[in-house]
Image (cartoon, rainbow, N blue to C red; front, side):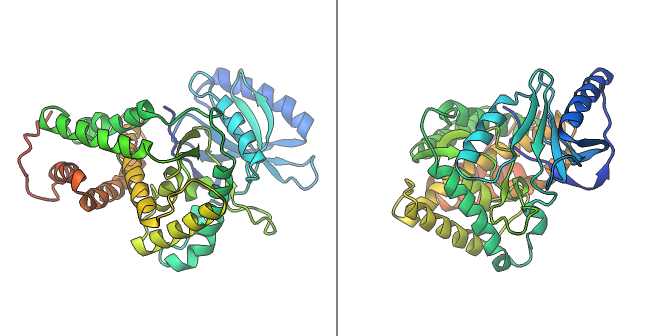
Length: 367
């Protein structure tokens, strides 16, 4: 599974360096051809962002097209990243009326792609974390994009977010967070608890109606348009989109990987999403309380998965900055598990692993 967690945009221009001289040479030749055809300025090339996967993004000035000041180049080594899903989902989103980058050039065999530049500022960069209410108009723009995306849904177009995929994602928590990061063996009573709880989580989430799922719909992947007349936020990092629970993307938006809100604001935006979804004819539960509970169960699956992903990014991929946000996910997991009686065993397990509560009987083996 490719990492669905996105890039932090560079605050100052960063020179482009290459670890592989052969790939650098291939890129130089490709860029020469594309720059000539598109009026690009090769000497303006600089790093735009670094991705949690093997992708990275470069920015280059465009002098040859009226009204176009810069473009983005995706550098995605084809032996590590498949760009075909990105191209497919970009087309689906454009048809749905979303503001997404157009694919201007694509050298599939090399993994180089020229894209529209949707702007240099993410939604994350303009959010005021100290004043939730001030951000409501911004979040409603995100909700509008989400509803438009979901309203375009058709079965059989995107891969299914099925029980097998949900289970593989959940396995990241014991495999990487518990065993590799916390040195807790996922066996015995621990394994029994996880199997039981994971089964419940999968069952609850598969009961939700199915729509298109971005799979990482959050402020770091939403862009402030460079044109102030453009009302739509830009949408990025959608290549892992699937067909799955309607609850997933709103859970992702409001229970952010890098930003936490008080529940009052989470409820406010989620209610407004639910109202817009109902008006658009989307298959959300007519009872908001039931819908919100389903969102919480979906969010729990995501939080367990991402805790594992962040541990893997640190321990396997040498990207320790992600693990710094793990306490946010543990807090999300504990808050949701504390609400539901069926999740009490998970809460006890997490509390013992994290040392947030006295041990309650688990014989947790240290590796």
